[in-house]
Image 1 (tube, one colour):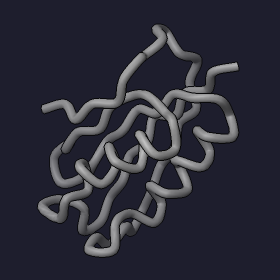
Image 2: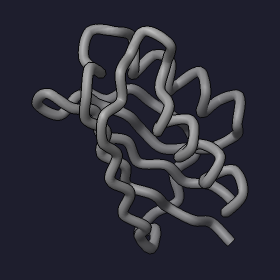
Image 3: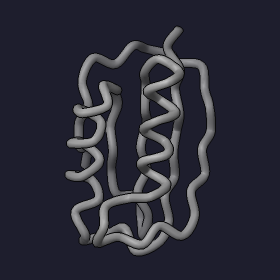
Image 4: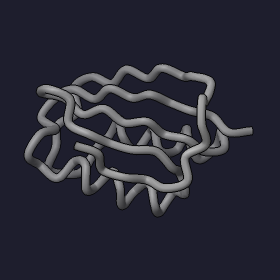
Length: 90
């Protein structure tokens, strides 16, 4: 069953390659969705089977080595549509 996590990441996450790193991790883990800057934070929507969606959320809580994740809010939602790719949106 497809799970969807709407994730809001705060900290030193802008200008450190967080979105590009997220896309690479998503492709490696096998989730779909998107990532974007949202003010001074990063927002992501993750879709995938429960195990891989949880794995991606854990990765986002750590972030890339050059970032400093301070706070992560995860909202589990019912998917309204099935996403087929993972994109950086602007």
